[in-house]
Length: 236
Image (cartoon, rainbow, N blue to C red; front, side, top):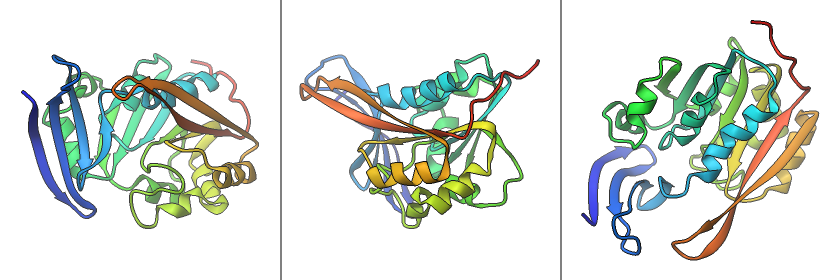
């Protein structure tokens, strides 16, 4: 098997393709990828930073019985790492593409079986940014965002408002006391860091470096983590 098209869907942003292929440079290594109009969105080959998004946020929250919102399902690696923590009570994933939600439910993603077997997980189609702009009827202890390529390189029109001071303040209203917002990016962003500092008391920028052995190069993704004040452990 060199290339297998698992699904091909038309979306409002273009043609979404789920494919599985064997790496020519690594015979026997099979990876799953999602592309949008032939542009790679996500791959199962390097998932270090997607997993780190969950781990770094959880490490900074001292509470228990945590509720977590994940903006962007992707291939499910961020959600899977959140669910590894026994401190997590519930995980809600909001995914922009209904087709990707379908990939999960149809068992087409590498982690489908593992994710669907966990009763703490809820996945729905929707716009996570729109949810964070609305009135805060629900509050989460941790909000993880992995939707755009970077604060300056957006997947869709209108996403840029999230990365402003006012957008972040609206998002912060959805956090419980001591809650954490963590955002994934493939690039640094000084303007976004400035906006985070204007909206939150504590801001950390975490580089996640790894070697892409397919091209023998080191690559760095970036995590932007913000919080108002440390959370105290909850009583069970």
